[in-house]
Length: 266
Length: 260
Image (cartoon, rainbow over all chains, first blue to last red; front, side, top):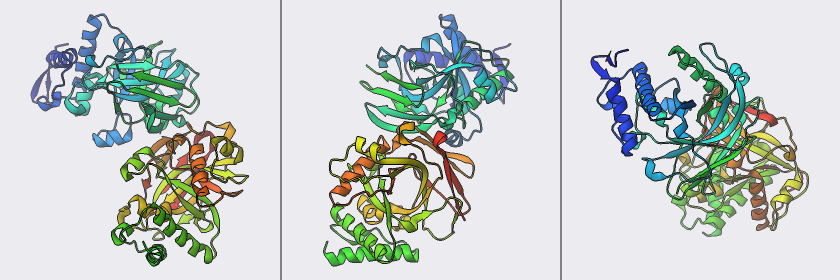
């Protein structure tokens, strides 16, 4: 595959655009959205994402799962899109919850609570249903994702977000891995910052049902020849609006049936 | 505020509700409407309705979300009185034009099987006094134009109470975690809000304890059989004629309401 692709009237150099994102992450400096000077198709945005991930793999990380973004209807309406987007998580993003996050490694991190799936079987779309997802899931657990868009003020289009691997940075997992409850959409979640409750939500905030979100990813990735692998984690999408992670903060999420998970910033 | 001003404020609220004509914020009309004066206006409005045959069936707690209290610049929630004529049976429609600018809030309703009398009521007392909990919808409405309310207007206006719909399922409170029950609010079948029951003052059991103690300051007891609405699990959802709203509380059931 050529890395120079015709996209609309603009020649898009996938490798150069991926390099911009990698350089921003390395330098912890935010940049203008790619859409500011390039017209991107969704397919080319996913090609940039693959290139970004390839760079991470060349540096010794490996892909350990998937993740979803723009899973809330309110966010989709905000951005005038009808679908979520998917991205991947690497071994370098898994953060040990017992150690504080080093903020100097991040640009402007935010935290969101998520229901995380652990897969025991491959999910290869098209045709994957929420029921297939539950059958292929060995357990679910509580998670907190630390997102960190490489774009200024988290301002981006769907294509920008896809290229930036859905703002991926770090994530932490809770300690309880439980059989997936029948109705994840009614799992309650309370988010606290420094002991103060800032938001509540139910699982339905994620595409109506987090299992539905994972099925969407399996099907959408399937269209591009990808699949969700056995042993992978899938971060199914933020239940609440993301909250900023500041120096000294402790952010925790309590989930019915899944227990709690927390993260600190030094 | 002088007593005749308090009475006049109460009369304006009563007429606004009766005539479906919203009024200017009371705080723009009366100087010195502080929290004690606002509760006195509320007491007068309710006393008038009781004199006309209404019966007290419970209480509601409002401003139970931290963000709301910050917005209003207050440190504690407020409360209102629930009268028998506010309760609607599930399945009956709310007639168009009967309310001014209604909004819907899903709440975990508590029903007491023994009285709670503050001060000194603890969370343990509330758990012991709770016969069961019910999924419910509170329909709030403001007699103040365009919801331009301060906390004083809200308290005087009976904490914006309007209607209550109780679902038909009762659950023992010891069978649930009253803080972490998930709630999904749908308007016309589409998910509008999600939340957890802990959105009410961190835990709705605490909200009921707060209410019992606050009412104790006025020598009011929460009676056996009282229904207590401890605060919303989500943001209030604005509704329009023709909308139907359903709140799903998962294992404890669901409850819906239709706006004709």
